[in-house]
Length: 447
Image 1 (cartoon, rainbow, N blue to C red):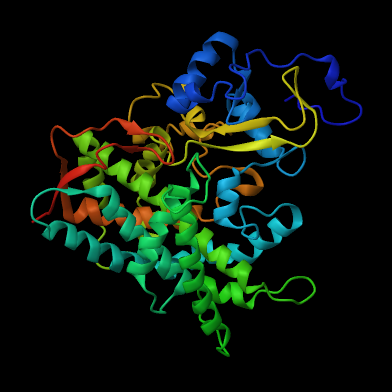
Image 2 (image 1 turned 90 degrees about the horizontal axis):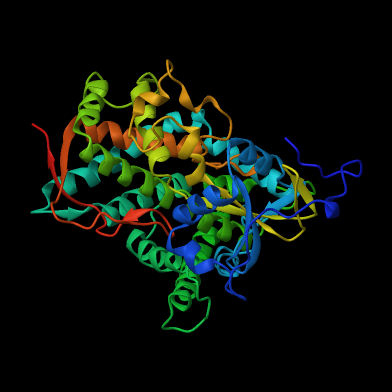
């Protein structure tokens, strides 16, 4: 790799910028990029190669493609790159949550939260996920006629996230779900104007309602002499190096982030996997055979001893990544592959590009066996990054895999589903990849 960033490196100002163009004044090439980022990247990759420049989303941008580039980006976190969020997301997530903080504060917060997302913790959480998922699936099967998967899966994942955060405490699920939907809709709104009839304005109002509710929950929990072993309890008991607790504002912002992070990506990955399985009955049948021996209450050990479950989930996330990518920004002039990338330029992490193209044999084929121990096609670092990488790798990746494994096992063992004919399965990619139809299913219980 060639990321010269120290004093002994060749002087960046003597090196060329990556090939490419800036497009229109102010707008740059944003409209084409937003129409289909995948097609945009493919066209320019063919024209310029794996390193090229553009001007999108209001910023000069260097696109760096391939596993080596992905590793370079993740290695640069906190050194020559930092996270980049839009002003709207900053406003709605809050300045004090894990995603927004940097450096030592970020590492310390991760250390605080990490024990709640370990495999050891997940062992005790499997029964809760199984119970909640069974209740929802039974309700789906009892519905007359067809139903739309996406909103139904959102409700299930939201309840599971609430159970992880608040444990046995009773919270107002319909109230939180209603405001959560309005809040998340504004996170990716291109128009960040606080007017009551705009998506962003409604999101800010929803945030205010959620913050008010969560603040009361946190205040009540602060009065208890002992905290239960849930995520909120952990946040309340944490202390910084000086022995001071987290402020209530910080805890509330962290709770909002955890609801968001523990929800939409799981919904996206699981719903899209159900679509892929409906389209590939041979793979679906192999999945059913793989879980046929899992009887009685599910356990983490039994799930981990069924490798085809992880193969299915991983191939689903490779084929349709739940998050298309993320953005970093350079904190100094850097050099990659002989090209100069000036300070302040945006550098996207394209998960979608990493999971396609020459990194994988026959990349458009849905083939879970590519993740088998025999083939192990994901062994190239930077080629499979559904949870990101580096210091900001998704904290909840183990939780997400266990949650999806439990849901998938129950679905494969006890339920059948097929796609309603004639629906629009063209994908909307922003903010999360989902078909326009929301995936309409005929869903029933087996046997």
